[in-house]
Image (cartoon, rainbow, N blue to C red):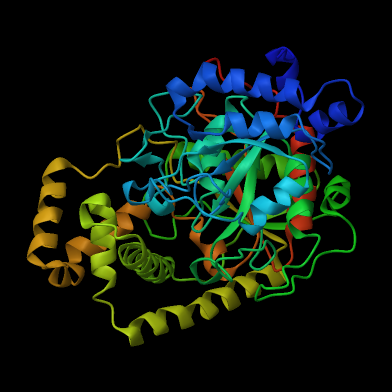
Length: 496
């Protein structure tokens, strides 16, 4: 099978590739072979793709395809994005033989759009970390510097997009997992608002509504077009009837935004230090926004960031415990098949009283109301996406001595006392320290995006985050398009 040259393939985003196919200037099979060739060239160094699906993809590419992305190569995230007959491993040894019998709803919609799925990308175990370093599949690396992380939990997808394997890939975001890797890899990442993207058929919503599926991409228009694919028809079995604009997101993204009021902050919600580069990224963006005619000034919502982080972790750890219990019950999984960090998180969650869990969930409303009050004064909130440049691979790994200690506590069933110690609670906040800005949009259900407008002196990307009010996806996309035109990023490519 012949293939177009990689340099030509890399010039186009997904919308552009679909146009080539529609004009019969290239075939889906040719595009697929180029994408597979690029994957084979770089994946040994990146470890971005953990489940190749080449035979399935070749058969599909040779079939009759239709839809807005007919014939475009695509990668799924190996977490909740089920493809019938292909393992969904979720970064865990416990799920290495888990083969779903049906597609998830987002995968079905991507296939209906004509995409050719040829692999699934790496994620940390159950998506629980902001780095992609699963013990089951190994660490994934940043194409801009292989010693550093591509972020997480959609790190495999972000690495593949940044490396030119595909122009857009499946991702999801429960605490920053679209925005964090987008920021680390110099690409664009939009987290849609709560209820907009269907989560079915196996669940009504993920992480009590804090998580959503989406994509990471090189261009804003690809993300806008993908949002149209995922949202244009309702999920009749879902819990919400989303308010989708009458005009497509693709068209809304093309509109020059009116003069926006934007409040910005570089203060960590956790009260911890923020790296000078993260501050510089926001200051650079604020200057650029002023040049474009927007009103920008220091401001932030009146929210206790430490309390929000604790309430977020209460939900997150409880979901981890529920997942482990389900896998033990339904698949016969054993403790040794889960990572120590995951088991500790779950064990501590089991010490939380139901009344305290409910109270933590009730406080989500307080954060949502406070952010809504902020958005009465400002159209958008601007922050760093990360509090520091992408960390080195392994930098956040639990030290061997602490791992041994964790194993001992688990065996002796002493995790209850651990949960009440200052050491544990401080460790929870320390783990969120590199990514303290992203959880707010998840708990409040607001749309947010990371835009790649800054690089460190060593060349590492470092994105900035915008958070919009309820239904603000169109505003975010329009502003992102304006920023993309002013400071283009899609053609920047790592040397690898």
